[in-house]
Amino acid sequence: MLDKTVTDWQALAGQLDIEGRAYINGRYVDALSGQRRATANPASGSVLAQVALCGTEDADVAVSAARAAFENGVWSRMAPMDRKMVMVRWAELVEKNADELALLETLDVGKPISDTCSVDVPATVRTIRWSGEAIDKVYDEIPPTPAGTLALVQRLPLGVVAAIVPWNFPLSTTAWKLAPSLATGNSVILKPASNTPLSALFIARLASEAGLPDGVLQVLPGPGGSLGKHLAMHMDIDGLTFTGSTPVGKKLMEYSGRSNLKRTFLELGGKSPNIVFADANLDKAATMAAAAVFYNGGQTCTAGTRLIVEESIQDRFLEMVTENAQSWMPGNPLDPATAMGPMIDAGQCKTVADYVDIGLGEGAQLLFGGRQTLQNTGGYYYEPSIFGAVNNAMRIAREEIFGPVMSVIPFKTAAQAVQIANDSIYGLAGAVWSNNINTAHQVAEAVRVGTMGINNYFGGDITVPFGGFKQSGNGRDKSIHAFHDYTELKTTWIELT
Ligand code: NAP
Image (tube, rainbow, N blue to C red; front, top):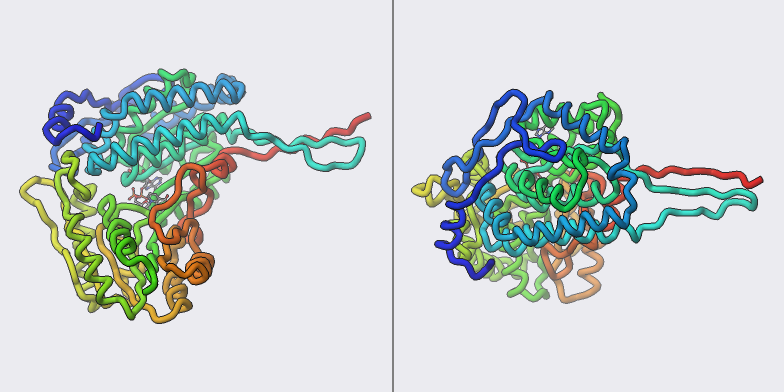
């Protein structure tokens, strides 16, 4: 797939037959209202497809289908070994359709084709396959109870789970939710983000082809404020798993409390610290400092947006980072040479521009970028941008911009670096760069985040949990720990007579 040229991808894009209907009970259906909404290509602003605009009545149909499938046990009581086979076949089908899926994701999200081919699609395949393969290797417990008694502690599926996901990694986030929730036997209703529903709709059909029984998985595109809220307030939904912004995550907790106290797991925003000491491998640290914030146009929850750098090397290191920023100038996402594509839409592009103005107004120094670009394409491109002379009290250092904007903050001592890193409402991810093992470990331990890299950024794979401290959320995606979010513990106490 990576040997294709921009011309090859453009030709394939012209041949795509895009499905925009909802997926309920094993088939594609229009919204009951008949309403549709256009989804656009952020690289050109042009309409890509018409997508079903589902409402509360579609949600109720989907919940009924999911409930019926759960109660009849066709999936929830299927032997884990057999569930595994379905999941593995599903992963194989996703892999077989990798080119089409990568292309669809690039067109819908504006992600560079090199990323969707090498990151999003392979990560999705791995997540589904790994979760499927793991499910018949998870044992329940027999605790050490007194003689004459026997206790069983079992993990049982929650029941019907709603999953609500964002637009920045639509396919891989969908996989992070669907793979463990389905592997553990739940029935699931997924609501993709309104502007990026296409890849989830595509892989739902592949799940059915792999043998997932009808009603076990539904995908409902529609507005968060009405459809998403209805799902979160629904009395017949047992679990809610969410990836998105912290303000919406707070609302979902509230909806859970106001309805049936459904188990609610949240993966939320971040303002991640990337701490560089003078004794680090500065070439690698500079390359990765740029990648940490410019990858996916900075539309990444873990983006290393606060570069916290030892004062003695600040000037030299900033020159190195700025040089690296050149290679992140945005371009056509269908060109395999492009590292950074457009922002998701005009609104997000304006948000980034507004924050650049805020930074300038706060007295930060714009060292690189700071402009919208490639306007002739009709797309929403913004330059990689770097602010120096930032202090951690500024809004550009505290608020999640969700764009390619780096704030550089100097420190003098390790204690000060940790204090700055932790001075945030968020606690999702971070990294520390040092060749001193003591410094690196001590700082990594002291920074209050769910994932910390030492001499790397974005490290990790499906075997390790992912999630946040503080207002970055609760619960965990990925690894065997994700299974805990989708299961209830049940104790059976037996007296032997
Ligand atoms: P968002 O505005 O919170 O939306 C996320 C999802 O929630 C969308 O499907 C949205 O639907 C839906 N939604 C909105 N309001 C809702 C409501 N009142 N009730 C129920 N659902 C509602 O986030 P976003 O802008 O799509 O994504 C960016 C955010 O996600 C950033 O904060 C980023 O850090 C975070 N994120 C976190 C992680 C992580 O793992 N921690 C990973 C990726 C992204 P509509 O699309 O219709 O609005």
